[in-house]
Amino acid sequence: MWKEPLLATELGAAASRIRGLEDLGCGLLRFAVPDLETAEIVGRLAETVAMPLVADIHFNHLIALRCLDFPVAKIRINPGNIGDRAKVRSVLEKAADKGVPLRIGVNSGSLPKDVERKVAEGTLSRGEAMVEVAFRELAFFDDFGFSDVLVSMKATEIADTVVANRIFSERSDVPLHLGVTEAGPLVAGIARSSAALSLLLSEGRGDTIRVSLSDGMENEVAAAREILAAAAELALMSGGKAERLKRGGVKVISCPRCGRYGFDTHGFMERWLPRLYAMKGELTVAVMGCEVNGPGEARHADLGIAGTGDRVLIFRHGEIVRTVLPEDADAAFAEALAEMGNGPSSFG
Image 1 (cartoon, helix red, strand yellow):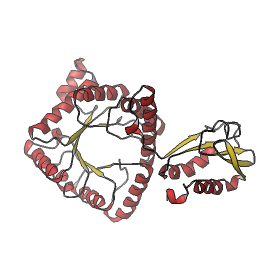
Image 2 (image 1 turned 180 degrees about the vertical axis):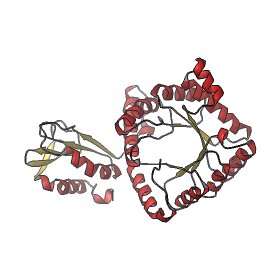
Image 3 (image 1 turned 90 degrees about the horizontal axis):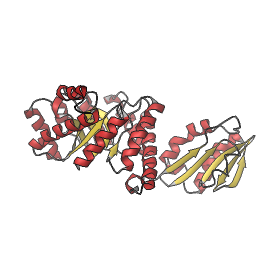
Image 4 (image 1 turned 90 degrees about the vertical axis):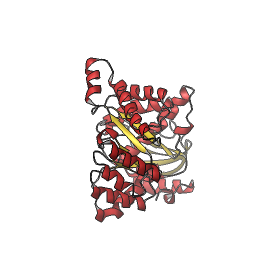
């Protein structure tokens, strides 16, 4: 989700960053659209970039109608807070005319009062309550004959997220957007999102995902990529289908670094990870801090780099191909990538 100020005077900078997110693997980008001015800006961006853009709208149906004048890919609304039936009908009719799908978003912390009462009384779990609300909202759409819709049911609790999406996917074939809402800062948010989303995805549930972090957009995309890869491994372990989860690109493995390290893996990863994620070819890259974790333990890597005191090793499939000084490590690594057909032109 877009997190930065969005100014009409800085559309070029926004478009450039969107292209960077796309290079990292982002396939869909959502914008909060609180007013008509923002609708104009998001609409102009949608005309400019290849990335499909989603407008997230609450309370004012006129904002949704204005967004639909532009080539937005999707509108996220809640029929219950968008206004009376006539207002909802106007949005659905225009969305149908434009061929734009709508997403119903149900959050565990903002359930209708009557449903929240059932949770408090113990009649429903919070996960079950989200499902009830989702079907209630879908019925609203059904009344108008609108079926180009998908659903998200997001909770802050892992169990609530898993329960809700399991129940819904067993009762309906409506597409699901998965996420753990307000998951937290970088480490906590990735851990919580991974626990819920990897499980659901490996079971064959969900069609799109968003990793919700109190951190930068780029890290949300990187985390989502890794969660998809982890879910694919889990699916294979349980005999499930992993094809839909595989996205290709570079797989990066690296040692955590310890007192034995002879190479600054942390600094190298900070410099190189965005560029590696932006590469298109399938490749396993190993970044190791010493000769113990170097060529031997990373023998399966297509390309690797490791430190040995005052030298840095470049290796392929466990075989050392070059030894350089630490200050030459980045240049040597770039050359090795280029020799494999994955040079700077592959990642911009």
